[in-house]
Length: 146
Length: 146
DNA sequence: AGCAATTCAATTGTGCACAATATGATTGTG
DNA sequence: CACAATCATATTGTGCACAATTGAATTGCT
Image 1 (tube, rainbow over the protein chains, first blue to last red):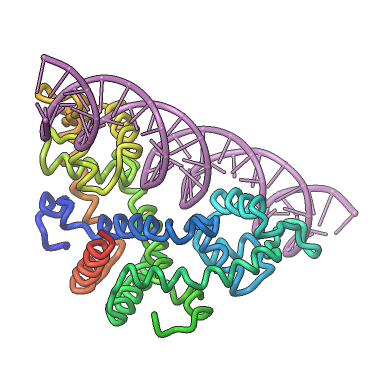
Image 2: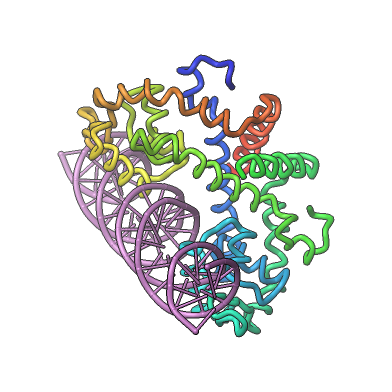
């Protein structure tokens, strides 16, 4: 891209950022019909994925894993609590720390969520090699941005 | 992905969607320091890219190009108008249509924006081949999601 | 011409993202 | 043991995204 004339570099079709932005919006939208019956938004689903992998995690740990800050996560986790999927409690050892734990309903949702990746894979219908290459390239990009 | 056990498929590290989401957030954030001096957010910058390529475009045309709806674009373009970068006017031939045109200040901003893609390319520091492959893969993904 | 269907934008309401700041708990240092 | 610095989360304010609805202009059909 650095060998383009500046005016050419400003064309929408020359941007990497735009397909990235559009693809992210499109994928979030693609999840909606499968997550709505579970009562989850896409960012809420990501938080649940973290909790299903390891319950009893602090807000900060969730944030570092998902690269989201407290301004995003505090209200999001409160909504998960209002939906009865998680409990929020201060850590006994360190009162600054908020520990997020699954409720029974939150654990039960794991079973119902197992169809989601399969439904999305079916909708994408992307060859596994393309899928893995794209994932690796995106992870590389994220690493370059710190 | 379809050959994974469901529980495995629900691991965050197996998701394509998550690096896509995280990369999109990270790229938007990476633009911020270069766009803020121009008085633009990243979505506003995308709208300006469309207008710099062809001025006097309807809101619907901008929306189809950027895959954004009127609920997003109506207030965004009003903010661009408030910033003095565009004019909003109803089409003479069809009063339903809102035509968005650059002001003098909006055209002048084009020159100042030419550094932006170069600054971002420098920050990414990604080999052109990787850049192009990732862009092609993302466009392919967008096409699969309609 | 009349009128239902369509189209384009605006509005309303919910839920992110994130910068900036605030608040309270903990730690480190003299 | 004060007490400044740090740390974890919460709050405030701005700006997206998008579903759902509305309203007005236009088109199409008979």
